[in-house]
Image (cartoon, rainbow, N blue to C red; front, side, top):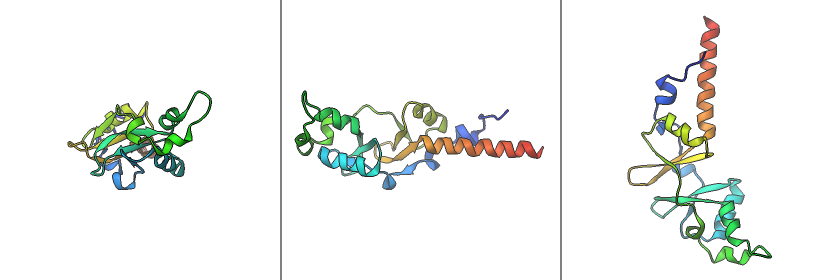
Length: 152
């Protein structure tokens, strides 16, 4: 049986597993919803972090947040896109991790989210931890243990 008790897997910190901030698509709090929808559409992501100009994390905005804000009773009110800001519709309640949190804590949060934002002690955005990264780490661990078991 393969054990996940190894500190190499779940006890390690997420520092080496995150996608760094400079490689993460994001929008800023004062961007209008038209810009945010373009970013989401062009990247193919359903949600992105919302930052201020100094890279402080403020929330997440998703296609669903934007669409909910422009749905009228009888039509989609596209004209609202250029007049509303990301700040008006973003989700401010989001799970997040610190750089020294364990992979186990990250895994726990990723059960309900495709990615989790990582920030430093001053809430400055450091990057994201994705399900893909965690699953890749676990898969590599399982393969390594299976190969070692086959050698016995």
